[in-house]
Amino acid sequence: MMQNSLFLKLLLLPVFAGCVSIRPSHLEQEMTVAPDQQWLQPGITMTNSLFRATLDIKGHHLTGLLMIKRMDTVADSTRAGASMGSRQPAGKGRQDVATRIVFASEIGMTYFDLELKPGGDQVISCFGPLNKKALLNILESDFTLLTGVSPLRITKTCRQTTTRRRIYGGKAGSLKSWYTLSEEGDTLFSTAARSNMVNPVFIKYNGSLREGPSKINMDNPVIGLNMSLKLLKR
Image 1 (cartoon, rainbow, N blue to C red):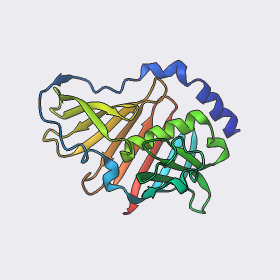
Image 2 (image 1 turned 180 degrees about the vertical axis):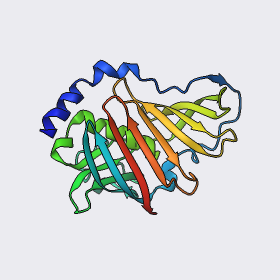
Image 3 (image 1 turned 180 degrees about the horizontal axis):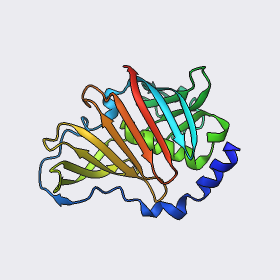
């Protein structure tokens, strides 16, 4: 039943997706020096983190543990075909940086296991009702933004006139992104992004970004997908 109803909801995505804007309101453009873009990547402080997680999608509720783990490997020609399903073959002597995202129940059943790379993502495994291409593409985009797999290229520096917060716009891989920081520019409050008309995502952070956020909330309003993360171990 869950599989059929979720599939139907995903089919209706393009009809309603155009109504959601990711651009923060009340912006005035500034000509200031862009911040340290590496610092803006939340994944820098989440290379090996374990979270208690809840996933809600259209009335369905999943709970468990979510692991974010960064893996650095040196690829060579002998391993060019080792990555099953990889969209980009490894090159000799090239440094591959992969981020593994595993969400599993408390009793060990894996909901999904994803591997993210700048050159292409891979689905290692996925629980049947969630194993839909449209949904997996959205999850991959969400976690690409969250972990900073594709670094942000800042093209706009703005100030929010109502709050005086700093706003940076640009692209992270294929994602058109907006980052909202404190007035001083030393705390990241939220990010928002979309790669096309289907999958806008809004991520809120709670806690020091330099040390790693203690709470994270990811919201995809178009499909009613919301994931909350609470840090357990880093």
